[in-house]
Image (cartoon, rainbow, N blue to C red; front, side, top):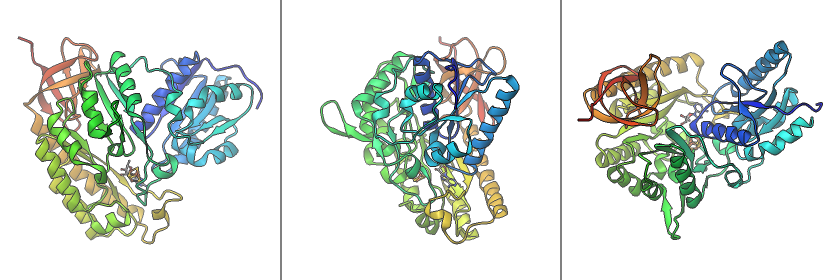
Amino acid sequence: MTPRTAPTTYRVKSFGCQMNAYDGTRMGELLAAQGLVPAAEGEEGELVVLNTCHIREKAAEKVYSDIGRLVKAGREAGKAPMIAVAGCVAQAEGEEIMARAPAVSMVVGPQAYHRLPEMLGHAVAGRRVTDTEMPAIAKFAALPERRRIAPAAFLTVQEGCDKFCTYCVVPYTRGAEISRPYVDLVREALTLVEAGAKEITLLGQNVSAWCGEDGKGRAVGLAGLIRDLAAIDGLARIRYTTSHPADMDDALIAAHGEVDKLMPFLHLPVQAGSDRVLRAMNRSHTAESYLRLLERFRAARPDIALSGDFIVGFPGETEADFAETLALVEEVGYAQAFSFKYSPRPGTPAATMDGQIAAEIMDDRLQRLQTLLNRDQYAFNRATSGKACEVLVERRGKLPGQWLGKSPWLQSVWFEGDCAIGDIVSVTLGEAGPNSLAGAIIPVS
Ligand code: 5AD
Ligand code: SF4
């Protein structure tokens, strides 16, 4: 590649999970610290970072088509953007991307993006660079301080996964479980709150496995971290995601009953309702043990809203197995959920298992599952209608004078009135839709 002028504007496009969203924000902060500014609304930017997700189907193809689109648009505009590929596809297929896509200047894995400024220097000099090393922790220490923050902020506390569910690429793309140190997290949380965050969602591929030592050298788990963060003045709400049933301890359950700032919401993926399938997935829980666990959360916090992830069509899943997933959904009554068709991920054990399921069967199962999940989400929303609750105002709505925020149960609530982004307003929930509710601000008397 020939040397080129340094880009002055950037756009980071993040796909996939909230951890990628967090990484995308931090990559933007890094680039801003180098003097680049975000591209104007509707423009791509002179540097485009594709922050990719590898968890499900066609991830790599999507990256190549995005690159192709950027190259074409650049050619038409007479100015090719500099392209960086980041995230889990970069980690898994870095070399191949470099070989197949000459327009890409930088490939950077999720554990290496703190080196973007240095890589940018190489790219400007005309040298293509790949960095997919996984030096645990180094990244966070090398990132700039957090500054402009939305009222609902993310904070990555843990990365990687040691669970090795047989369908999942995460243990390979994000590496082994690591917990960020307690003191760093408290410091970052304080900075976020000073910069305007009212709510912090603690993120990790396996967030409930977070562990560390508090300022006094005592071993603490996620519940201890949550309790200590709850002491921060100005921080009103704490959430965490994503958890694995194997790591939910008594302390975390108790925290849901005792820490007011911990929101009544739990995202706890189950994936399937058949113990045979769960065993083949290497999930280390049964349908029954999962249900008992949820009961304990409900006992600690009766109004807790439950959320889950599901995979239909795992290799060998029979109609009877799938019926057990539907039965589990009937029993739980989820407030929301994410459901996916199984997608073989190269290199994972399930990809080569016998009994891969035909696409039409997966489509049919997914549709039946989603019919139930949508019904339950709508029912949950209707059941909260009439309740008073606090809503964190996150952005303006589509209509003039309208605002959008989140209820404690993570529902989207829209309403009109006199408030500003970042306010926490008391609202009576009104008419419920499948995906959101109307609200009315309760006048302060
Ligand atoms: N196929 C389909 N869904 C998957 N997930 C993870 N790996 C796969 C796969 N290979 C889903 C799981 C997980 C969520 C983040 O993505 O439900 O909880
Ligand atoms: Fe993937 Fe399982 Fe780890 Fe979740 S717990 S990231 S599904 S291996």
